[in-house]
Image (cartoon, rainbow over the protein chains, first blue to last red):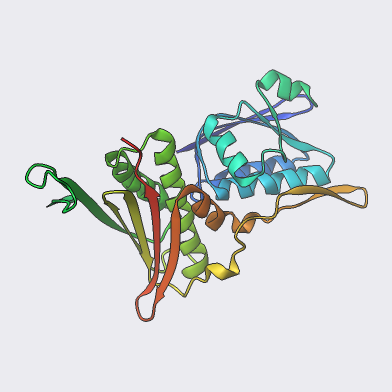
Length: 111
Length: 170
């Protein structure tokens, strides 16, 4: 239901997420993000082109990670948000909170 | 799952003998667990598709029900596996109606702000922090995605949430 793939690059962790992020699967994403931050990795790119469903539980997870990363001088940037991701973020008024990029290379290179 | 087809004849139609509409309905009862949310979404999506909604509107119906049931587990049952959730949908003449019932503690939507405070980045000392009221998003989404949302509490049986969405124009 939710697949998460983590690639540690030189300065950035690229986290590719696919599937459904709801109240059932958000804890899995939260754990992955906390693990990366626990490793001292606070510059994150989330590739979200294959996220076909996002609820407020998923949004809470993203905002918590953003807050934690910002406090450590990092950021959570979104690459390739799917239509559903963009729609839900806009609905919540959170789209301006995250920096979004049309492709992964630009998002990774932005750090 | 059983779908009941009820035939009725609108009295206002000048073609009473030949014009009919079908009132379709179905219901589902699941344990109050997060891993049932997908099941609930699939169930209401089937009804929304039968009602003639497009893919975007079906997603909106799914998300509204997801948020409602997540709220029930979090706020009225306050835990997983603490009670059941019953979901029913009905296609009427003008609206698609979803009723969600639980037997948890009374849910008071008045405690939930009507809309979240717009998130703003604020500087606290040298740190950037965010003032985000993410907790109220569930009810906010339900109200934004559906045309009518009402909460009712029955002493002895529990919360009844009714959500309506106007059927698409034909």
